Length: 558
Image (cartoon, rainbow, N blue to C red; front, side, top):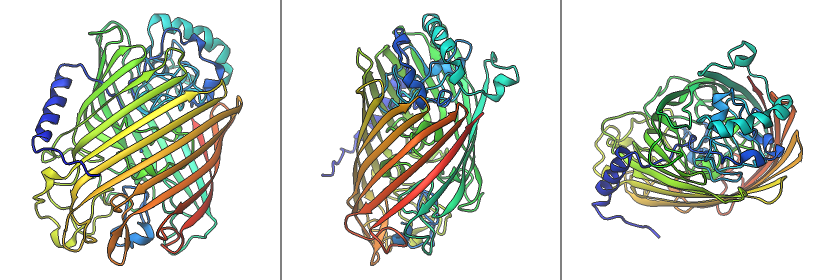
């Protein structure tokens, strides 16, 4: 069912978003909005597993959901351990109001109590047991009370923490943190390479039978402190490697790097301020470019449990936004997020209409259950049609060669709406379950109704459901099982073409993998993934309806 908003909805939504931000009452810090309750001392050691320091959101000829080579046939392509009191960065991960394990993927900084995946005590260690909104790779520092609790736990956990270069150089007390990781992977396809050499639907490791240098990641940041003072922070993420395509942003470094080769991107660049107003947890406000708070999985390799990502993340959700986001820590169990954004995965442009992003995250009193909801709305086509033959086109955009450069008269009615809901539950000290469901629709997508031949518009919808089980067999070994269904009725997201027309399909995938940490600074993640489509042959150059991929990646934290 397509929901059509009244003409005045756009103005109303944008006005509301601006009002909420100006009042600083909102909050949706993509990855910076979690606060760990003061009783976080209950956090079990199991949580360390998924924390970088504890364990320590693309297509043929392109690298992912938002990538599609213009000349390629679309049918073939187409933080668990608590931070140390002396480590401000990781302290943010354990913020006083961070949701517990299993918290939905709303971008927040603090990892949940009892996180089976464990967010580490070192910088850049996210908590995979919570939603993205509450699982920030960085975040605010804990209060004195929480820091004292953390200090006692950290003494017992130090031996399991990765050693970071900054600490070895004697700068562990510096308010500015510099850290990162190196990730390489190999993926084999049992169907063979085919003509295009693509593992359709499998991203970011989309190249069949190839070694890939996915991420050489560097973070520089000063986190805000969750205390009773006004304080400022900033963050800049630098990503080198093949995954620049996976995180491509329209209008930024267009055509600077050849497809399927090493490149560079700045996924995040923002300033942030903590305001100790309204409630004990206060309000955090950040502005700039940041990762979306929607969904469970995220772009950074250490912020997701497996090498590959699900269809819902790659094709159905945004990766980054440019705008402002507020996170209001209403209580230590409940956060509210509100923000104004200029769209999905696009750089600054004064012609872009502003949209809205917002939601909430909630954690149960026993810290075993979390729920996160996110809503994203706004125009997401372009004021003028993009150039013909562009290297990469954003997901959801249909290239129309005959209209290139002309004004898009329907831009203001091409609004896109996405709802994501993520729930997590810790069944035991070793077993955590995560579930996510998404619903998206977009009005009058130019070209979707005619395969791009004459710009005929058509509404598009997509729906998805995913389930994750994470089980800690040993302090160094965690098993992961993910299953998913992604329904793209009109083909607007996956953009498969049959006989010159976009066709819809239902895609499924099941992935079995593990996270092995022989030493704190090294993660090894093998996985076996089976993908299949229900109606059309989408794999191996559009000749098969299924594929089996076997992959492994190695991550070195520094």
